[in-house]
Length: 613
Ligand code: G6P
Image (cartoon, helix red, strand yellow):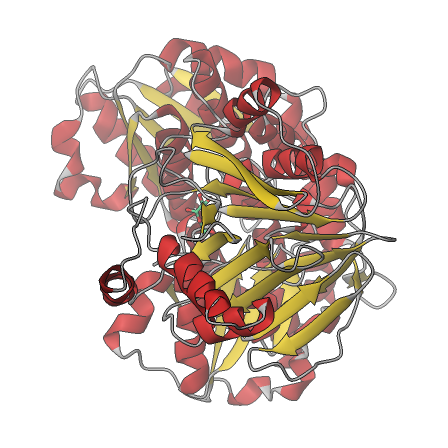
């Protein structure tokens, strides 16, 4: 979690870091701070609260200079407060550091340092790192040696960025494990560091990504990349072709609203270059599928967390129906702790927007050790989930800032559909006619999504009627059952309304007891193979006095008779329905939360990328 930004060059680092932190606030937002080398001393400003608050603090009590580092925090050890906010300063005031990760042995280190008479000023684990670096410096080490010696002593996964009055012409950054990325942005006579691309993309699109167990010594004119024991490594400069504007809110009130509305275009980008219409072929070049004999594959496991796991559940229906390969979907945090049965006859697909979710990365590693083939479907370019995999599919939807994921849910649905067709093709399951029918169905998605988006006003009316409810039950079946889960997740995470999702057929085994006038039921029942079953389940809910919101296919008269309120989607093939059905549910959740005046983009207690277990 947490966002990091650093700058070294001739400009004043403060506004660059402050602006960068604003773009990373989605990573954590309980406290923030900046440290600048101002001539010979370190100046720190930090406080609890959001970046705007830090901005006010800096305008009252400014600091200027270069280099500088900044941090926005999602608390793990120690409550959100000024004293626990980063940057943290060493006991002699010569070193200052920002950190992403958890020092697993911090209690032992803290005791050792306290026994040496070092006083701690926070409850954080991070403070042990900065004091260790300071002790090595005090003992005569160079800054680089002090960092190396410190990193050898801390356990866990980390991203750190350090500056020191002893060697003010450099910033040192390091990465160990998967606690979030460290990316260096290349400028002319200046360089940038960040945990994530959007923070520095307006300054440069040339980036170097630190791998695990690497560190970099960065001056304004030079970058030295090395292993943690100082062996130099050549670096590869990657050009990022994201549009920096797409990381800016524009005329929308919230990023989530912007990202919902971007979906027609984003899904066009997801499809771009992947369908060869001349011979009805799917091209997923970065997947390296030809390295695997698909006919020997006995099963696929999809691992993911949160919204990405819901996308995986839809993927199960798509891959099993189209490619006839058995698929299991696992929550990543559960997967690795049960000695999962995976081997080289299986493909494990990790789905992750950020590509940095700790549980997902750990599950990938577990599967890799057991010999499985590893693929990923990832949005963040250069992320660990992209690098750890033998092949990947990039979502190609640009940065997603709103904590509640929207376009990074629909994009993997498109990717999984393409993958299912490609797998079926490799297994020779599809005649030309069915292949081109499947391809033409997916190529209509951006248009159909556009139609769903045009109906925002109708959904707003439904939002207005239901904004004050306290509970709601989302029901779906078959391929739309995960959409019930995703719709309920969207509502609960941003509006704090208790929204529960259930497979509609299971309702009679318990949740039906909850239904009364206070507990509306939102039933997802577009025309699909489960439609008739859904009809009877909605009848059962109505018979118990429940109010019904029905999501149905345009023109469905039977659904209209049953619904107190309606959400309509255009007619489409049943395998495409989930991509459409989720759109009104995103819009509904968004407007309910916005009408309640809640912080839609940064809901309480959440963070966009969860780089801790
Ligand atoms: C967090 C986010 C969710 C996201 C999940 C998995 O909980 O708030 O929106 O679905 O992490 O993130 P990933 O980056 O792996 O898709």
